[in-house]
Length: 132
Image (cartoon, rainbow, N blue to C red; front, side, top):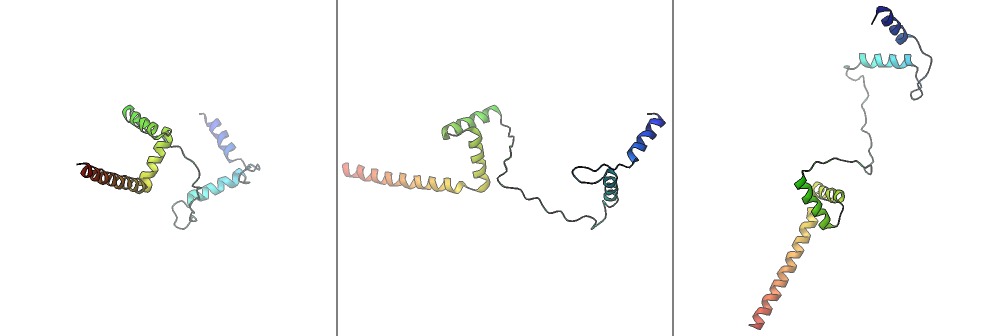
């Protein structure tokens, strides 16, 4: 770049502008001055206000990409089909159960099934003794 072009660009960059930014309401000069001040104070303790964490609505949805190999996906698709769910719903429900420790409900159901099986076996044993 020639010296003349560089000088012209520098002048254009430092030429005052009276136009205000539609978002901030500041002129370019005001924004430039604030940027320079922020840069100068970047390492000073107490120069910046504490930033409060943003409040995020828990109902906001996010999409997460998950990678499975073909064999894994085939097993997941079959499990989802057996459960009568779309694959994405199945993956979400399994992930949430694992994340929230909601396996207690599944364990309770298994325990209930085992009790019923024990009762059935006891009744079957009585019938066998009665007929023998």
